[in-house]
Image 1 (cartoon, rainbow, N blue to C red):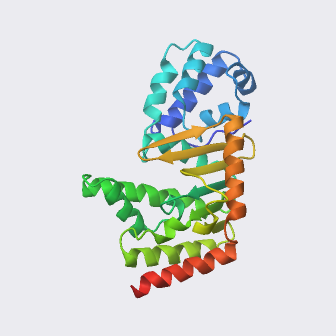
Image 2: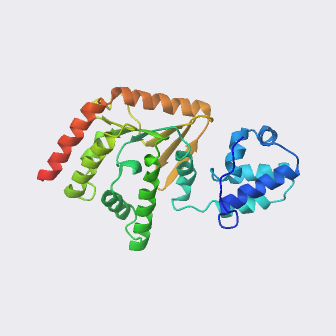
Image 3: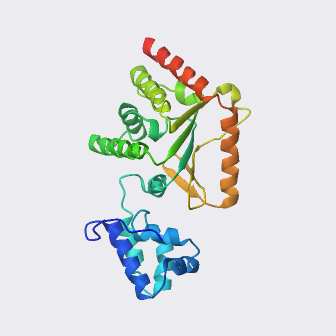
Length: 276
């Protein structure tokens, strides 16, 4: 059974949702296992909602309201608890990242968020949202930098990044920012829990993924995949689709340069930006 964390339910909407779910479950004399069986999920999943480590889901809240005869109580609390610093379409994936044991990402165009420098993040945010206020831009940049904090946790996750060569050759923010960005990636890759590979142009015919994907594996739950496009994102948990994405990722990993050769290429391209 998942132990509740020490969070004040009266100052944290997600913790309040969890405490109310626990109160309703116990009033119905149901264990986490029994609730999970009735709404087709694991006891661990219910425990994560109760201890506020997982963001509540609206559809799941509807099922729980029906099971616990609580009207729309949990659904209303769910809407309050789903506030997030990141885009709503990405918020669920951001929560799962904190629970994952391994995160395997493929980046077709841009440096993935976990590897971005602050200057690079600011440059692409300004490009993607040209009419946003400076305050809004800085808020998004701070959220991205905060997200990288999970890499400082020695217990998880292991991060595996495959970068299309396009990522290296697209001078977002200009040569100076790109030089610092590529050097930063090399430094990150020298950490034991971060692996970086480059998929060169010449290998695109062997393995190709047309959008950003993130494959997240867990110790006590099935693997899920997050895909993202322009202003949209989708979590995939259908076993057949997850397996398809995993195979595509494995092919890309096999076709990519070795980690050592990838670092050599990153350093070489970085030098090109420095002399420009």
